[in-house]
Length: 430
Image (cartoon, rainbow, N blue to C red; front, side, top):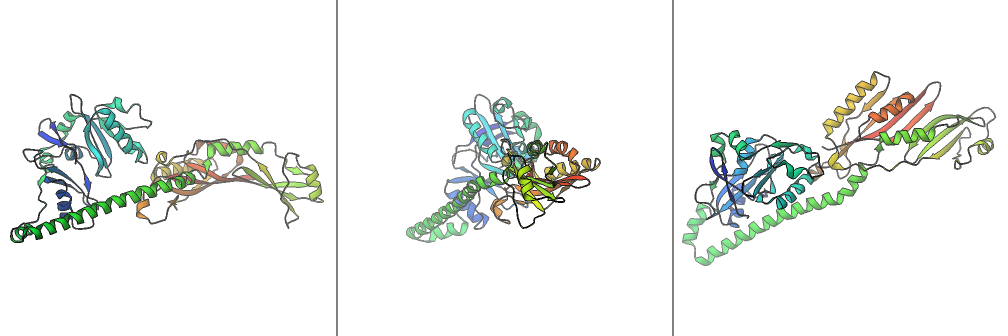
């Protein structure tokens, strides 16, 4: 357990920062687990961080001799002053040291209640930001905004300091942040210890220590397994969210490859075009007296050999397309599912007025992993969408589709009226 540091809260008094917030394993009763964890740090005081409706609970301890009177948790005061479910604070304590504290989904983040210099603490800040799908989801409250200027993220920086903290609190907040007295030994065990022989007492103490150690080890192993699974799935996730390339890149490339396409080749009439991946498949239908030999002699020399199958009334000709290199999407930059749904829905409503039909789907699924796995709640999602209309509007549509929208295929039907159909995938964070 790291040493706690006194912090003067203007208008209220002294609180302590630099606490170790420990996740209760949740395998035994809360009281039992707190006592077991407290034994390992010779605790005199304890503070339980819990939220109604949340399964996880965290506890912080202060050892005997570290404080002279009942301590108050400075991080709990920050939580009372700020109402975001996820945030980070970095506060100047004066005369050199800084204090960093972070909350994620309403709970304190492990190793993120620390006092130290800027160099050491900014490493912890960077590590915390990499755990977020979008760093902007965590407002940063600080009186040292210059320390964040070099970070490669778009951040939500807000002013905050010890003075602002003091002005944001009420007397009841300071009272609720006070630690409770801690006893690692239940009353019954104390009585038993007075009665039992020293050898028997030593045996039971050893058993309790062994059980507490085993439970802590099991919780740590569980956390390592989750982290390992995330690392193993990282490659699959990166591939999945880049399966459909950005519309604003792919569509213009396809259209350029189809420019000047012959509509009639030796009596074979172009009826359909389907572009996906690195090529476009052209379907030519036979007119009167059209033959495969005639097509082979008349087709552009640079085209590869066509596909000829049992249907003698058609020729399927593949035309290669070289797609430009694009910057891969990353899971961290994806918007939330609700934001993606909103953006696609708004675009569909506007496009309808000019004769374009965009059909978003609501059947979101994880891009990798197994459905229903609790450990994979962080996994990005994907959903299909489609668009159709006149080809003269296709390029403008592609330019307006957001970066999270990728193209799986674009097809054209050449009949009395030429139309296109675009199929794609949209990617989002949960």
